[in-house]
Length: 194
Ligand code: GAR
Image (cartoon, rainbow, N blue to C red; front, side, top):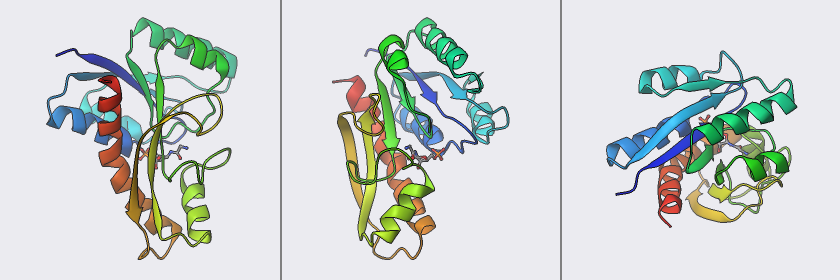
């Protein structure tokens, strides 16, 4: 069976639960997917502890000087000979320079049913607040390919979930997160093999 190398990109004070779910989904099924490194953009991001526990290398780079960040990220990804780059809680917009030069396809997981509740400013808890305010009974998660418009690339995985019993945005967030954890690994594996 062909083996694959991927990197996971996170930003800010990333929690890393999707990263851990990805690692576990490959390890539990013995799938030949190696996570080369995890990008963190803050030295004290909570995800660091998970990387250490799971024995996955960390690549730290600040985004303060964005041009420098782009150059070093592209270099790091190209030299790692990746098959895919998985964003998991990476809240910055991918620029055309990164997308064109990074050398492998990029996927993202979004905590809502795109094309609804996506776009600029729609990330993390903002998404669940908007879904709650809209009075939705169903939400979900979407895995998509990344282009330089927020949340607009081809959808490669989507799953919905009943949120009619959720009484707050954070309850919606917790319900959707469970779906994210099973969806991302499956969507990435299917995409790698397509
Ligand atoms: C996840 O809910 C993910 O879908 C969301 O950030 C959270 C990261 O949690 N991403 C976005 O909103 C991207 N637009 P995690 O660090 O525990 O995986």
